[in-house]
View 1: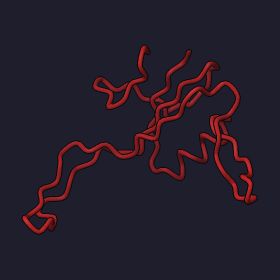
View 2: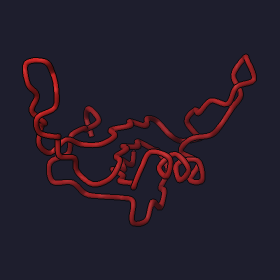
View 3: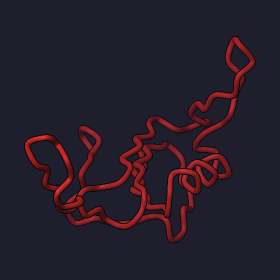
View 4: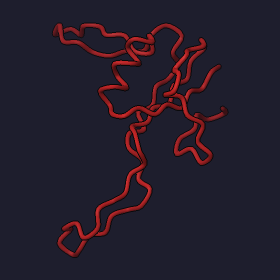
Length: 103
């Protein structure tokens, strides 16, 4: 089993690359609308998104006082039974925000 931790500039770039790599495949639903599903050999895909490094602060009326600070990029985790070359999008975090149970 292979676990990949991935970082992209944004969600759109991530989805495009995951489609090219066969992690996702596009199928039509019952209403003939496009929908993403896992490609062959893909066990799980977790969209982490943007990671908050520092929380923002807000007043009593929930108005933002200080904006949150986010880590660079948009994150995904992929569990696969096949090897996939994600190139420079694969990262090796020291403190991952997500893990797959048992891996």
